[in-house]
Image (cartoon, rainbow, N blue to C red; front, side, top):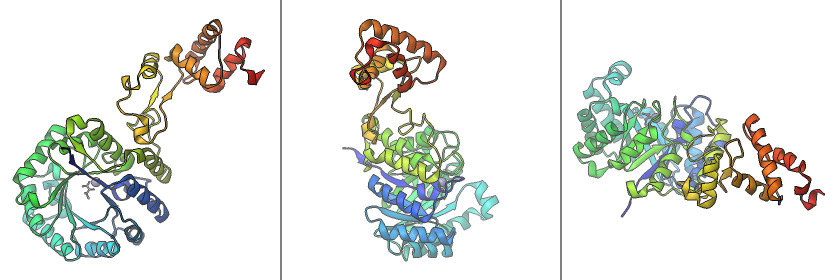
Length: 391
Ligand code: KIV
Ligand code: ZN
């Protein structure tokens, strides 16, 4: 039987931290509603202590969203946790998310704390939050550059103080998939009372490995996966929700893991986040990019027309894209060209098709993509092919 991995979406918090991605209240609300429809298990709505506006946004979202948990991020400080408590007061299922760094470099240069002080602070923050909220997540910032035994010690201590989720962030996107999987396995094995908490991962994309690390961690036993829509986030971004979810779905034979995401909502959610943030999705972006289901090469077009599975490992419909796309360019073949003519209402004799196809190839050498208008112009030049409606 497949196990379920929870999807923790942080588009509205870590995603919003990407340069130029901040959203106003209305925009955050719209995205929050869409995330709820998408079926995320947890949405991190913001960082309540960061600004009065963010506190207000988390509060408003918490009051409206009913079908998933709503989380607010807090430093390990009572004033942050108080802001989180206020923001989440009306949530149906609130989660306070506390973080503190555990790597030597962060503890020495940023926190100026000893490892013992870090454990003490983490425990007291979790215990404080636990007074107001049953569901408390603790993130060991920069976990992938932390000493694994120290990490297990911190996690054991916060679980003892009431943490329900312990999160292993690859904060600076430094980990490699095999290494990260090993770390997750080690934490699972060596953290005291790990059976009392969920194990989560949160991967950044500085080396382009955010999704690979997340999937490797899922295979190694992580049961909550943190991510953002379109992979937006600090610097090179976070692991992308759509790639993780479709990776698990398409390769369920390999992972044996399900999520509760309604994948047919993926594309519309991606479009909304792109419109609201103004950050375009690159055309070749996996799953949701403009070219993700476009075929130009003749051999591919021919294959897809015979059987879609030849070059499509998932259907566009499964992610909410109505149809794949045959792009006509210099690599396209006769079959796709003829098909497009039919779609446009032209029935042409073989000789005309030969002639127009030759002209199309000459034009395609000069242009990146041949449009329907170009094709129309070519066909209009061949009188016998003009459809009734054009006569
Ligand atoms: O990247 C990170 O370490 C974070 C934590 C606050 C979870 O975003
Ligand atoms: Zn992060």
